[in-house]
Image (tube, rainbow, N blue to C red; front, side, top):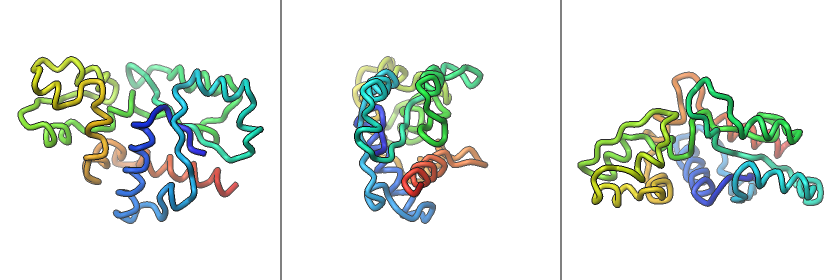
Length: 187
């Protein structure tokens, strides 16, 4: 089981896996590995899974993927802190994004391509969803999707656009995530 925050995360992970496989950077998609991607909500929902002992009762390998929700690179992710306090191990049981939100993995140039006449700029730790939700021009804000920007545009990104956000020049965060999940499956 690959547990993610919401349906946008599930769709994004499938989209990433398909494009990364087409590019030859991973051998199998999550579907081909028989990994079910399940939206479960945020960190507090994981606490319920732990309190109800669902991981043990279901008896299936699991891996959790959550947003860092960090306001800047130096901040400590409260999601990571909570998961560690729940007894989970980073890299083995879960992965926290390096950026603030899933929406920060939509490259601004992709949005500019998808929404002509938009001027999009945000950093890895700006609240990208809020940026799209409060865009000054009403028409463009509607085309961006507002708070639904990931739902509307994430899966329209090309492989090259994804690499602009997942690969920092040394490490590809999606490949690290995929490898961690695959290792847990094979353990």
